Every structure is written in structure tokens, then in C-alpha cells.
Image (cartoon, rainbow, N blue to C red; front, side, top):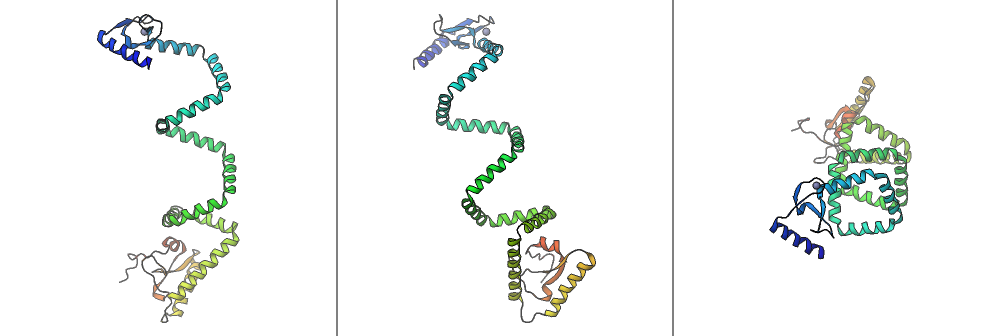
Length: 279
Ligand SMILES: [Zn+2]
């Protein structure tokens, strides 16, 4: 409080009298505001101006850098707890300020930070993998639950993303799935069985009494034939999907078409009315 009062008083006196002083270093005439406060001096200010003080301090630091850093290191080591406590207190008191400072710094140096992080990650890849594995092993149930919740909540989003990935690089996705099926034979078998059963059930439900089963079988045979001749896998597709999003088609001969497997995969239960102008 004493200092504040003194400074305020000094400011008032300065502005009233516009007191000036000549710097003992650079010899420039400056107002008293340009001089740092110093007890014991006649006018309460240092003989050299703020700029010169700064310069002097910088020069001193540069000249004694090694020694100063050594001392600083010893002090830090000796008072680690004290320093840590002090900075913890300061951070708690100035939380918003700290966050803003970090944020600003990050925005300003984003590219460098991300690059450094990438290098650090690459250098410590194994360590990261180990840590992740340890965390996963220790939190199996928790992660299962979180993952399930996420999948339920973002079902459509995940499906759209998967489809997008597939369209971008069908070969990569295919290889990934092949690898997965190979390394998870039990699960793979279960999935295939479930899929086939669902498909059979759908067909059964969607097959009306008037469906021409002979004509249907012929279409399937023809698809096999085309595959044999061209070497490209062709399959029979339901023009209007059996369980489409908007409409559901029937398992009848005139709702079937032969298309390549990749085209069928891309179609993914979607009916394109523009392609098949069905009235
Ligand atoms: Zn000066």
C-alpha cells in the first residue's frame, strides 16, 4: 500500500511539475517516469533511465550467463518443493490467465508444436503403445461400455463414415476385412452365418406365392456364368432392396438384376429410382 501511495503521489507530482532528469548513461533528458524507482536516491529514482537499466541487465546476464544458470539450477534443485507449491498457488489464482496464455501460445505455434509432437510420438512409439495397452487392460469393462454407448449414439454417423471410407479406397477396406476375418475365424463364421440366415429369412418373407422360382434360379445361374466368362465376380441384386430404407422390394424375377460385386457393395441397400425408372 505504501508503494502504491508513493507511486501515485509521484505521478501526480510529475504531471504537475513535468519533472525531468538526465540519464547518467545515455545522457538523454527524460521525464521521471522513464526512470526506475530506487530507495535512498535523492529524487527516489535510479540515475540511469529504464532503457539503459534494461540494457545493462541484459549485458550483465549475457556476460555471466553460465554462472547465473548454474546458480539458478542449484537454487531450483534445493527449493523444488517450494517453487512447485508457489507456482501451483499462482496457477490456481490465475487460472483463466494461464489458460489464455497457453491457448494463445498454441495458436501462434500450432504448426511447430504439432510437428514436434509427431516427432516425439515417432521416437516413443513403443512406449505409447505399451501405455495404451496397459490402460486398455486395466479398463476393459469401462471401455466396452463407453464404446457401446458411443456406437449406439452415433450409429448413422459411423455407417456413413464407413461407407465413405469404402468409396474412397475399396481395395484397402476389402483387404482390412479379409485380414480381420482371417485372424478372427470364430467371429467371422458367426457373422457370415447370421448374415446368410437373415438374408434367407428376408427372401422367404419377400417371396410371394406368384414368384416364378424357375426364372429366379435362371438369373442366379446367369450371374455365375458371366463371372466365369469375364473373371469378374457378378452377383444378383434386388433392384428395390428387400429391406430398404424407404421401400422394401420383393424377391421376384423382375426385381432382380445382375451387377458386378463391387457395384453391389457400393449400392449397400440403397435404391436409386433415377437408375431404374420404375413407374
Ligand atoms: Zn539512458
